[in-house]
Amino acid sequence: MKTEQTAGPETERPPARPRAAVVRDALGVGVAVGLSGFAFGVTSAGAGLSVLQSCVLSLLVFTGASQFALVSALGAGGSPFAAAAGAFFLGTRNAFYGLRLSQLLRLPAPVRPLAAQWVIDETSAVALAQRGRAAARLGFTVTGASLYALWNLTTLLGALGASALGDPNAWGLDAAGPAVFLALLAPMVKGRAERAVAALAVLLALACLPVLPAGVPVLVAALAAPLVLAARKAAAR
Amino acid sequence: MTGGTGTWIAIGATALGCYGVKLLGLSVPAGLLERPLVKRLAALVPLALLAALTALQTFGTGTLRLAVDARAAGLAAAGFALFLRAPFLVVVAAAVVVTAALRAV
Image (cartoon, rainbow over all chains, first blue to last red; front, side, top):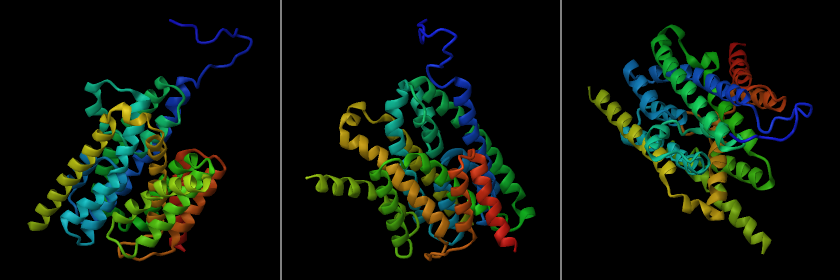
């Protein structure tokens, strides 16, 4: 065992964030977002999906934006393939999270197929916010486990209770999604390039929304990243 | 009955596709990440997507139209809570409560 710091007890400076703080942060995100599975269950049932279908989505798809996109498209009478395509495109961002997480977590190959299901916005945000591999792994695991368990439980409750609740929008539950995304986004927007990417992405998404099918505007908005990088490179020349 | 089958097809396709991209990201060889451009893009693309999703879910509707409604006020409340460094659950609750309150009046 290595001594972490040579500082004596009088200095009282922890070398990294204590494990308890990482767990607390991870549980905060896991519980808050996990509870919003209730909003998904209600929305899914409102869109005409059965309780079983709603639960299978949360168990197997387990990426909130894609699930919301799929059930709204199906509820609006969209074709199954267009609905699935939109949901899939929304889910492609998880590949980019995985790209960063694989470097950060360095998971052994046998664990990867299991860990993959937990690669989503929230687990990535918590893991990437930690300093050091051990803290990142802990943050990823605690967020993933708590969120997966709660998201599926509240999906079931939401789908079962939808008829009793009436209109989910009357309860403001449709504002939970964007608030979650904003909370994830805020700590990422640090420098000038980040602000430019965020602003351009918002503009592109809103400009495309009225003219492109659901799920496509978000992909167009992803172009903000290479566009801003290219513009900065050109300006630096 | 066709509606049920179609829905199951959509669920199956989405589940396979979404799991596939998650696993793909985790399994990409580490050497690819050593390139600075890829590193920079891997950091900036999720940021762009989250910003776009925030805007789309705040101002989007099911009918290819933009709308400014109670959700915008809810999001502003969430932004204010973030500014005050409130915990995650408080941020989300602020958005939900403000949106619901505005719709109730």
